[in-house]
Amino acid sequence: MRHLLIILLFTSILLSSNTNRALYIKKYKNEAKVALVIGNNNYQGKLSKLKNPVNDARDVRVALEENGFEVIYLQNANLDKMDEKISKFTHRLKSSGIGLFYFAGHGLEVDKQNYLVPIGANISDKYKVKSRTIAVNEIVDRMRSSGTRLNMIVLDACRNDPFHRGGGGLASTSTAKGTMIAYATAPGSVAKDNPNENNGLYTKHFLNTLQRTNLNHVDFFREVKKGVYDESNGEQFPYVNDGTIGDFYFKIKSETMKNKIAKNEVKLEVEQIEEESSFSFKNERPTTFSININQTPSNAKVIIANINQEYYDGIRLPKGSYKIKVVKKGYITKSGNINLRNDLNINISLDKSSSFPKKIKNNRNIWHDGDTGLTWQIGIDNQKQNLKWERAKSYCANLSLEGYNDWRLPSRKELASIMTKGSYSNPNSNKSKSYIKKPLLDSLNMKYQLFWSSTSKSDEKAYFLSFSNGGDTIWPKTSREYTRCVR
Image 1: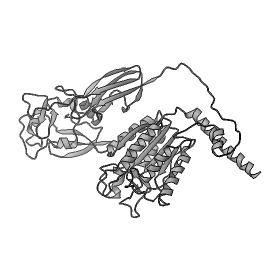
Image 2: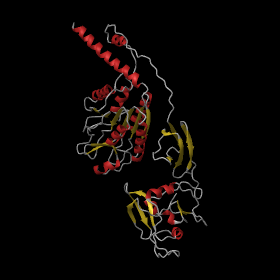
Image 3: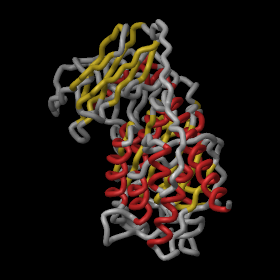
Image 4: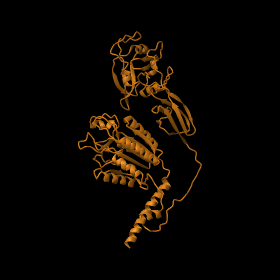
């Protein structure tokens, strides 16, 4: 009787598990899955250089692609690159059901919040951490707001923290509904690098478990934890903070109940659960279409000028006309119009700018500064250039002058490069002293010499420089100042 009860209980568990997988296959078989995989190991300064993270990230990328994920990949990235790829990733998630963020590298905890460290982050003490790293909570919020069904964040980032008196480790933080955060080790503990193997200990078992079938995501990370714990003799104990609802399977394989019971030597005839075929079709015309621009060089910036939305690969837009511009410093800008009627894939290559002559004679429109290699716009009616900051940036970005389309609003540093410590007399002005190079001074012929820079202080304020006294000032972006473009 006891053996019969055990057999019935075991059979009930198998039936339930198999039923869940059958329902999952039926409902989510074609669910889109997007991952962002980042590996940073080339650290300097107080944060030690690591061996495994880039190897880990490369192997995770391959394994996830084999399991049907679209993978955005990044290695040894600075803060700007990480932020750029996170933005691209979260845009992609808006048309996806599953999101997975994987990071291997240094992670730091400050005030019970976790931060991921980019390459090149100049962190001398813990007070610099928040402004020079990526907050895990920001990633959680951005993934959650994308509307995905289920999100996973995997942090193989619990290395030694030089700013933590106890040695470091990440903090356990509350997670959002629909999100699971998997840590390489328990809160406050440190995961060691694994210099004798290609992969770190945690990622090694993450990759091994990806080869197994029919594990939902909860059981998957439980098996990863068990493997790490056993191999480290209990020294490293991975931790999971789970707020997910529903199931996800990395790899799923259909198998009859009869075969499963036979493998466990249970001789019991059980009816096979089969997935029923069904179909439903209707005519449906798409209302949006995707634009994918393959730019060369690959880090050139793509701008869609007549929409407020930032471009990303595969952006979907309603049918219509759009103004496209591709720009990169040192290259000739390309711009044009597209008439979007279906999905569009475009290849755009930029040509390098030819070197500009160091001296230009008899040109009233541009002046080349041989000291810095910058070319400046001159000889215009400055009354037309008394602009608000945002309008000044737009004016320069859309300027076409002397065959060049890559003009921009100069930075604070670039404006300072045309200041001098000497003084000049300008016969066209009642000013006897000015801190600006003479060729530019002679071209200005203006009453005031206050110029916007592109350097922003905050959402509301930016820097302008005065060439009448050599100083710079923070000023509201809604005020009107003069504009001078540079390339």
